[in-house]
Image (tube, rainbow, N blue to C red; front, side):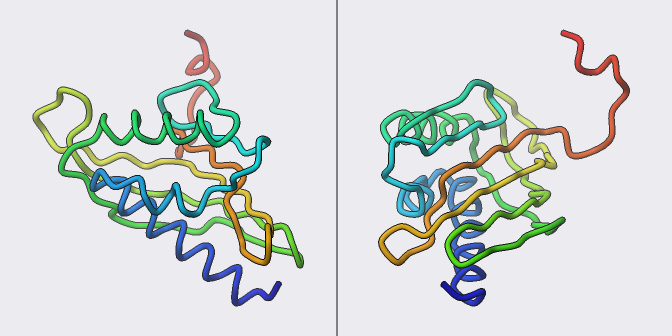
Length: 142
């Protein structure tokens, strides 16, 4: 497929992030692969494997945000071949998180992997975590 159609998939992915922060998981659900090897690793930990787990995890994660918005997307890198592509971005989001009463701004390090399925770019893996800036070695100890 063309680079233009991959750019469209990136646009759909960014729109899905924007909708997600407003509580709408529909655009991500529409973009995600139906295949059993699709995966999701969101900031709340663990992995979802396969469409059923991904859909449940998307709904649960969206319920943790209120009054949210996508503030910006900074593309670090992206590339695509005829049937496989990826993007690495920093998504900055803002909203109420959990039981919080103050709107928080969060920078997420996001990697998205796409492949062409039935003539359409589909999301097959998304990993988002709040480790967008450099941290000391001790920060991984828990």
